[in-house]
Image (cartoon, rainbow, N blue to C red):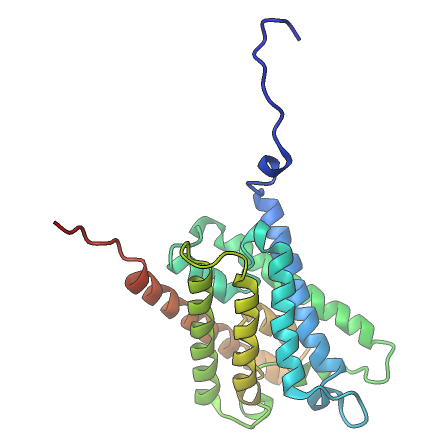
Length: 260
């Protein structure tokens, strides 16, 4: 280097990590969704009585709800700083509607989330393959839906309503706790606890998805009924998230009016 060349300081470690690439963000979404689905569906299959049957560890609905919430907390703290921690196509679309996320990146996020979820259930199927409970249709008990797929026997209208309302509430919380005025550092915990509460309400009705990637990942191994009813677990959460995103944008993020 010549003596006349301008001196430039080497970028710090923090500066290098300040702007994750799209590939890094998509990988984080895939891994985060994998953790979420692996945690909640693995619990439903191996540890919850309604899926595992008599004589097995029975953590019940409470255990599955806690698994969902804790999985999201872990994934959000691990990968949220990289990708924003969506791990859910409905969340990604709702954030885009609220103008918290760029529309140009939506399709990539959706694909990464679905791949992460399917990878999780496929590996769970591999774990099941040499066990006493091996049956592809064990995923039917963890699939979301109405009538025969509803743990409480609820119909289509009930399931559509609970999935729409719960996802809307979930997105309101996400938008609130990640707002610029919110206390930093607690968003993943608040989001995970919210999911736990919502799951306790919704598991008896719909099996509590609020997440199209999770629903797709279980339905592909859940048999004919799960595949036929999959549209509900895709449409309802997306509708709820879009409504919540639009309302939050209109009500809480309007430009402040100038006063004389």
